[in-house]
Image 1 (cartoon, rainbow, N blue to C red):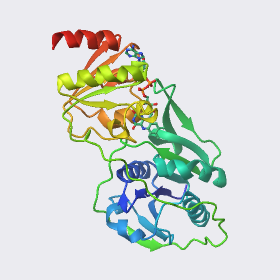
Image 2 (image 1 turned 180 degrees about the vertical axis):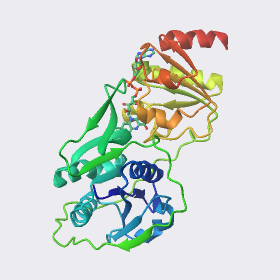
Image 3 (image 1 turned 60 degrees about the vertical axis):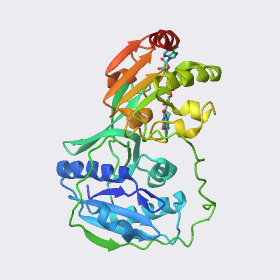
Image 4 (image 1 turned 120 degrees about the horizontal axis):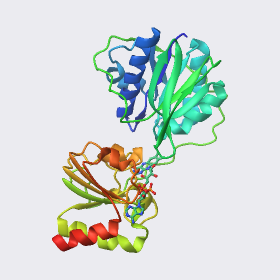
Length: 320
Ligand SMILES: Cc1cc2nc3c(=O)[nH]c(=O)nc-3n(C[C@H](O)[C@H](O)[C@H](O)COP(=O)(O)OP(=O)(O)OC[C@H]3O[C@@H](n4cnc5c(N)ncnc54)[C@H](O)[C@@H]3O)c2cc1C
């Protein structure tokens, strides 16, 4: 095996936190495999991120300037293909983010590499790479191996791996990719800002969040009233925001908001998918109400109520 290549993730000039987690995972693999750890930064001005990705354990930072101000998956994919061909990288670690998902799977097809996404653990045993991912809505974990694959592409889950330590001493080099033959099938049009909202999940100390378990849009009102009575901010899981039952600023989770200051979190009819947990699993006190005793939300709950959310909220109303 010749090297581990981490692809840095950034958006609108800001390095995504998941990049440091991915480098952190790469550092552990480097220790196990004894091969160099390289970080590739593909951006208009890659040197802007140099200090941030220069973490302990990183041997080399490769800066590739794309000449485009915005992330374009086709360009990222082509750059990595050329890079891997030149350097013979063996393990490519990509953040499992919106950006990563836009190029990771097709990159692996281009490279003919082994592939696994949403990885929550990775290790090397006797030189063999083993990646862990969950299936059946996080109820089962499986280990994936990649026999006979000289290249393996892994997409690593966020909020799962330890952050790499800042303050490395990596060598910095530049790589020039030839993008002249690349068909320009799409281009960035604009960013659309989320609408203004008086809901601030990040600041709320007490959140009552509802999920698909409430069954129907017509029930949102009663939980909204309950939240008001309790003095809680109303949060929700993504399916409710996607369906337009509640505006997007109410959404807690990976593609929503982090309940950064929350001390008490009520999860009503929320299964506890990793993307939701990303936004709230750190909260000190979590009370989950769910009819399914095996719902993953109970793994992070301080108190769990295995029961119907309507019966529970009726009982709660009576005690207010
Ligand atoms: C890239 C990506 C980003 C994502 N980002 C987010 C995100 O930011 N936030 C987020 O929430 N999700 C996110 N998701 C979606 C996530 O994977 C789950 O699909 C979602 O969290 C599930 O929402 P839920 O728990 O409300 O619904 P479900 O998974 O359908 O769970 C409903 C739960 O309600 C329970 N239930 C049913 N009836 C009752 C009842 N009467 N009383 C009590 N319990 C009941 C069920 O047992 C079940 O556990 C993302 C997914 C992807 C791929």
